[in-house]
Amino acid sequence: KMSGSISQLKYKGTTFNVGDCLMLRESNVKILVCKLLEIIPSGGIPNYEEWPSIRVQWYYHWSELDLVNLGVKESDLIYLGENELFYSDNSETVYIDSILGKC
Image (cartoon, rainbow, N blue to C red; front, side, top):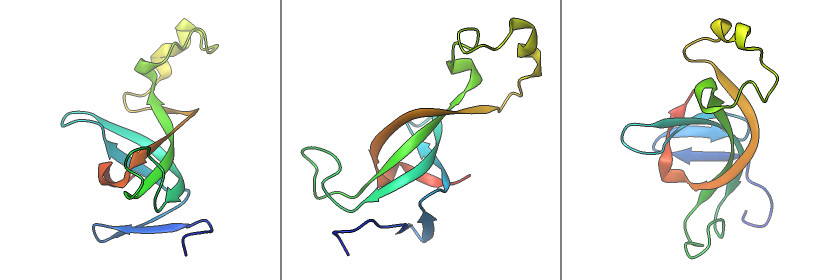
């Protein structure tokens, strides 16, 4: 069904659902974490309308953020875990072939 929203995607043998947290490949060395917001069967990315894509909301590692401007006291930075991520309001449409798996 192409006209309504799709809540599930099967890719490389794994079923992904809207709301799942995913790992995406940004490059050969960097993995990004996001939440799956929407599955777009076609038309999601200009000039590549025939390719399926997904709309995701990003999580960021604390080292990528300006924590002081976000209200985190410098004295509290010692409490941040090495792998701690922060949810953001930034979303983007990306190709499904960047999906590495769930997390």
